[in-house]
Length: 308
View 1 (cartoon, one colour):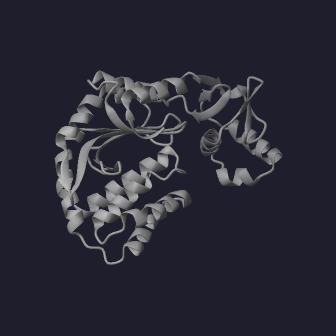
View 2 (cartoon, one colour):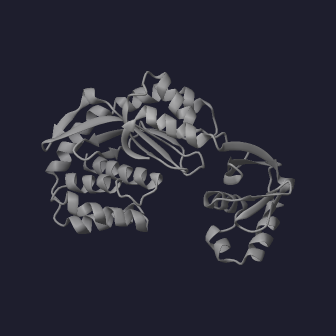
View 3 (cartoon, one colour):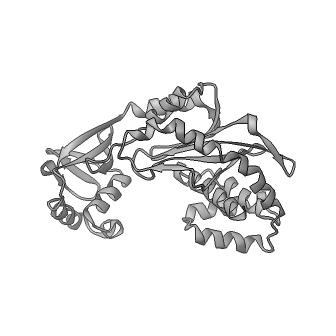
C-alpha cells in the first residue's frame, strides 16, 4: 500500500496483515539453528525471514554478511555456539504464521501497527480521513494532512500535517514528526525537528503519550511555510553535484539512489526547493520498500531544515 488513501483502508490492511501475526517467549535452551534460514524451536523447524536472520546475527555478535557467505554447516556451528552464550533465559520471537519475522530480547515490548492506528482513531480522526500511507511487512508510515493550515509556494498548494512511522520488526522506533504534503504530485517531506518524538520499543507509555506529542509537533507546522520560501530563494549552481553530495551524506542505498535519479528530471531546477522536491518525489519510485519511502521523505525534510 502506497500514497493517498483513507485511514479506513489503512486500518483494513493493517488488520488483515495482523491476522497472521503472533508472538512468543522462547526458552533459549529450546533454540537450535539448522542454518541461517532455519531455526528449531522445541524441535519444530521454522523458516527465518531476512529481518529475523539479521536481528539474531546482531544479537549474537556475528556479522550478518559473514554468515551469509558461509556454507550451511558453518552457519549452524556459529549460531549454535553463540546462542549458548546468550545472557537471557528467553528471547522474544515474532511470527508471521509459522515463519519467524523478528527476534528480540524479553525487554522489548513491540508497538504493533494496530496499537498506533487505534490511538489515532481515539484522537478524533475517522475512517474517512484522507492520509498518505506506505505500508509493507516491515514498516508503516502514515501522514495525516491538516487542510486548515494549507499555504501556497511557487504557485503550488502545500498542506502540513503529522507523520507517524513504526516498524513491528525493529527497523525503526515509533516516530512522530511534522510533515508537508505537496498536493500537485503528493510528494511529502518529513521534518527533522527537535520536537519530533522517537521512542525505543520498551514501554507502553509510547501510545499513552501520543496526544501530548501531537501537540508539540503541531507547534512546528507554522515554521514550514517560511522554510519553503527560503528554499525557493536559495540558488543551486549544479543540482546534479548537489544531489550526489546529499546521496553520500545521507548514505542512500543503491535502490534509493536509483529513485533519486528517476525523480531528478521531473523536479529539475536551480534552487534548493527543487532539490527538496527531488527527494520527496523519489519516495514514489515503485521499486522502494516502505522504509525507503519514509527515509527519502525524511531526507527531503532534513535538507529543508538546512536551508532554514
